[in-house]
Image (tube, rainbow, N blue to C red; front, side, top):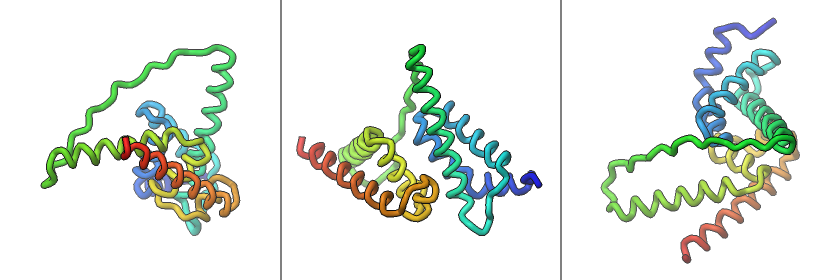
Amino acid sequence: MLMNKEQLENYIKDYGKEIYSFCKTLTKNKTDADDLYQDTFLKAIELNNIDTNKNPKSYLLGIAVNMWRSKKRRYARRERIAPMQSLSEDASIEQLPVSSKPLDELMIEKMEKEKVRTIIESLPEKMKLVILLYYMDELTLKEIAQILKIPSGTVKSRLHQARKKITKEMEVYRNE
């Protein structure tokens, strides 16, 4: 029996924002994020085996991760055959939030957040996925292990290594 329209709408309502946010973080642009998000739910409909008693969000994130990896492999293969130049999207200008903090403190905070994002982007894919799933989607080590199909100890190790690398790079940044 296929997933009905109501079930799909409930999954989108309950987990859509988090799934989309994760897709946008992985792809780094809106167009690819939109495609990955849609493909994730289309694949969920096709597979039609979401167990509502388990964690549907983890299952959907797992689909997104697998689809992203497949897309990256296909892209890498095509790049080896015929390299293409990519067009970058115009960077959006973030507005500073209204705050009682002085402007210089707000700017420092913004610069540090950007540096952390840059460091996370520079992490190896294995560490980056664990960091994003743990902090962005607030999943447990066990849930991440299930999504990535690796042991919990490996997730814990990658999380530790990523934190260590981020801390070290932030110390260097702050001392510059």
